[in-house]
Each structure stands twice: as structure tokens, then as C-alpha cells.
Image 1 (cartoon, rainbow, N blue to C red):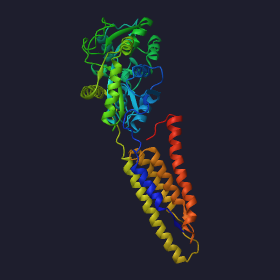
Image 2: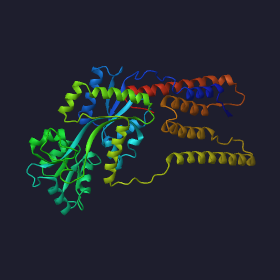
Image 3: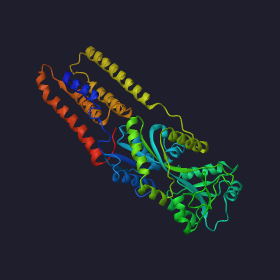
Image 4: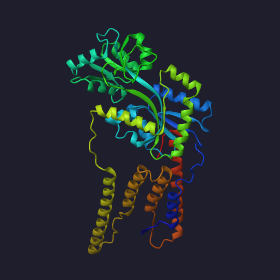
Length: 444
């Protein structure tokens, strides 16, 4: 009994590998561009993204529309990871602010900006440090003096691992002995409720949030920007009060690493043009966002500067992790070696005992195990996309199970082989359609 894998099946594998990019379009974009917003619908990032989306559509800045997809969870990490692992063709991009920097330095993600290609930075919102209207503190020095005298007692409401959290870390780093006690509260409305309910003493808000909430009982102590804001000119910056702290939140657009430069440029030009339209300019004023647009070297320099400020106060140290791909490859080699040795030993034992029962055939199990490992690695390392990788995987696994009994003619094997080929193509394309079009899940 021997395994039969017709030559034309091997040829099909090779053709699939060589034609991975056979459908690459000349003109970009030739289909809608998916924008992953890693937060729930209705939030600040989602609102901003939809403003840009509408401007691009209404002014025909791209031949195809942008489609906003909300993927909330883990402080933005679930959505950013999806874009990081998707195919770098420009059709799936990410809209994520400073959270991409803070998540890495807070230990919520094992990657940061280096895992993406920055497209453009748009808008800029400065944070405000605020307390309850009846608080004893009237300025930032008074607050920080109290924090340094009672370290670990004053409660700072923040979204842990997000920019509001790092605003507090930056402040306490400026005053020796100062240390806040942080409590988790995700959105600005929740942080407002915590202050008004006397559950916390202080928190950070965007300018838009502060302007909206101040009549409810908030008192601002400092603006964490480089200069005063025209909407609240009476509020001094932290720098004016002796604290070298700047904490702003810019909306950054990201593409997967390896996205062609010309496609990044097309997206940057469209988003930049949208920022200049009258409707976006009006909404920027309403949202108290600065009219900022950064690309190229200017964007890279700004990201480096912001990342440096955040890294300087980060308290989390990444653990040393093993090289998992090497361990997987080593395990596959070890498995293959064990299977070969076991087969030889069982074969020799069978001859010595003159057994009539044939030895166990470990080849199919070995083939399926190794193929599974290679299937996962090929997509993880972006050597193949989902469709060709899945087709090859099904062909290899199915082919390893086809056996020819004795003098059985090769023609008898045609039917099972064709069934496996049909299953391979059907599964690969059908599953790809199901995940990407029905479930809206990005695949490698």
C-alpha cells in the first residue's frame, strides 16, 4: 500500500504559490477601503473618522468609498492587531490616536508604531487636568504639593493604559515624591461622574469634554498643551505653572507594515484634502480640535517625540519571551524524527517476529501535522494569503490520506483526487467569502 499524490496536484500547488498576487489591481483603490476604528461607535475617534469619511465621499476625493468598521476591545488593541496582521495592500487601515503608543508602554500590546506604516496625522486635542468645582485646589502646583505630601492617597480617574492615564504619570514624574492612585474609568462621562460623586479627586479630559462638562461642576487646573487654547484662554498651561508636561491626542491613520508607498500616498492625499474642506473645518471647531495635518518626515518626528515622552514615564517592562516560530519549527523537526525512527523500529520488529499484520503507517499523521504547522507559519509570516494557503493545506492533508491498494490502477484514484481538489478550492474561497464579506473578519 503506498500513498498516491498525482503530479498534477503538485503542479496546482506551485501555480497557487506563484499566483498569489494575480488579482492585484493597477489602479488604487479599486474597491472600498475599510477603516478599522478600535472603539465603539459614537465615541470621539468614531465620530472624527466618519466626518473624514463623509468629506471624502461628498467631495469625491477617492474613486471608492471608505467604510468604517468598529472593532472595540482591550483599549484599542483588538482592532489594531487585526490591521497589523492583515494583508498590506492599502484596503484595510487603522484610525488610532495616542493609544497606539500608550498601549505598548502599558503592556497592553507587544507592538507599537513600528508595526505599522503611518499614513497621516490629523487633528490634535489637548488634555485638561480638572477637579470638582468645590475642590480646595485652584491651580496645579497646589494639587501636586498635596500629592507629594500624601503619595498614593489621591485618586486619579483614568482609562488605564490610555492617554489619560499617562497624563497623570507625566505630572507625578515632575514632582519628587508625588504618586497618584489610579482607578479605571473608561470614557470622559464616567470620569466626570466619578468626580461629581466624590469617588475620585482629579482626572484628565479632552478640551471638548471639559467645555461640555464644566457647567456640571468641573474646575480646570491646567492645560497640557504647548500654548493656551482660544476657547479657554483663561486656563494656563502646565508649562506656565512650572511643570514640563505636554499631553495631546492626535488622530493617526495607519496602514499595515509593507503597504506600497504609492498607496499610502494616495490615502494621505485624500485624507489631507478632506481636512481642508469647509465642512471638516467647521466640525474641527465644534470639536475643539486643532487643524493639524502631518505626513512624511514631520509625522515621523512627531511620533518619535510623543513616544519618547510616554516612554519616559512608563512603569511596565516587557518580559523576555521565547522565539515561538523557532520552537514550532524545532518541534516539527523533532516530530518528524520520532516518526521516522519509530517506523524503522516497528519495521525491524515486524520482520524479526515474521508478523503478517502490516506496521502502522505514520506517514499521513506526520504529513498532516507538519502541513498544519507550515499552514499557520505561512500566514503568520505573510508568505501566503488565506485562499492559497488553505487550498494547499487541504490538498496536502487530503493527498496524504489517498492510498493505492496493491495493483489497483491509477485511474481508480482519479475520483478521490478530484474530490479533494474540488474541496480545496471550495473551502478556500467559500471560507474567505464567509469571513470577509458576511462576518466582516479580516484574514491574512
